[in-house]
Image 1 (cartoon, rainbow over the protein chains, first blue to last red):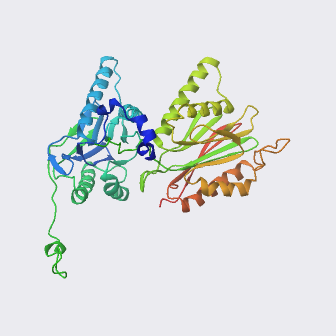
Image 2 (cartoon, rainbow over the protein chains, first blue to last red):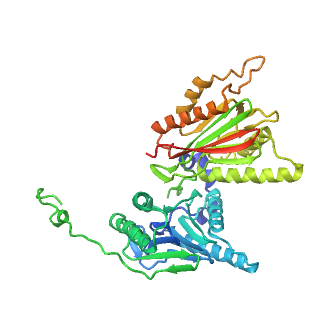
Image 3 (cartoon, each protein chain N blue to C red):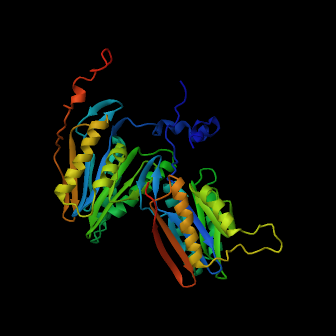
Length: 245
Length: 223
């Protein structure tokens, strides 16, 4: 379907004076977000990096945020678009609260709202360049979903964005089970984040883990993972191939 | 300076296969529950089937965001129809609505490949098959999606549909019983799963007949 854009005949259908306003490519980006359901609710993990292309420019970016009383959002992709999404969500939650009717938006509703926002922006060829994870608990029901920049969405017991899909999901498919305890959940998430740290060049070793239960949201202070680089194969890499590098 | 080109595509193919078979007094609609993107499996448990009306069930594969939006538009239109006409839409009516809805976006299509199944006004099974821009026809059976190239020839062999050119027109519905049709559908998916990487995980089967609607599941290979 890329012939749609590269064909000069159709390209003019999408390009015009208003182009300077459209998103063409992302500038400051966050990498993977990983989320799992556990016994009491949802756990999300994301590092605090904001990359500017290949530069690890910002190292204290909070990519996990609470939304209303019942939800948590994690974002990867363009950070400025995430900030815009937070403004949309603040407005949404405000309007919900203004009804003052005792009802509040649950995670399923917020996920649906985000899906519609992302899809509608994609329809106008001006996407919000993010992949979002939305998790929460309401009335004992746990919910964990994700939505991409073109509006592809689904819910599952474990989700991930970006590289997390390649590296974390396989680990989760093997080791996730129903009713993990909080400690077990954190160990599992840290295992995923460690693999991502070793293998994703945009990952930074400063992360947060967020928890949401019926009681509320807790986002951990930033911390780093222990890593091991002393594998013997790395010690003298040119051993047996003198002259190589 | 050359003009900037967009380096993202508004479409993705999330894969999957759909099948529907019309019987004398029943209709079987089935689809796998795998959702993919490229070589990744996103989730193994996503339903592609939606009941639009009492006697209309749609299964759609293709780009999931478009499929979901299409489902919502049709559900919304059906609700309006019920308010205005105080009755459910018939399957042939829903078939026309789906066609019109797809053609409405002829110049930025819903990347959705649909089969609509149900019971017509006489209670006979009916299946309608579509392309992405709304071209449709009533058939006795159909398959759409990534596994359709593997399934359609097999169904052609097993169900031997009469030519639409025959005069007088011959009924397209299969002489198979409901149980035989369900078994055939299971065979189709088990085979498609072997060779199509986008088909697998689980099979969801919906059966519509005079007694109502029923759902069945079957495990498929997860590789």
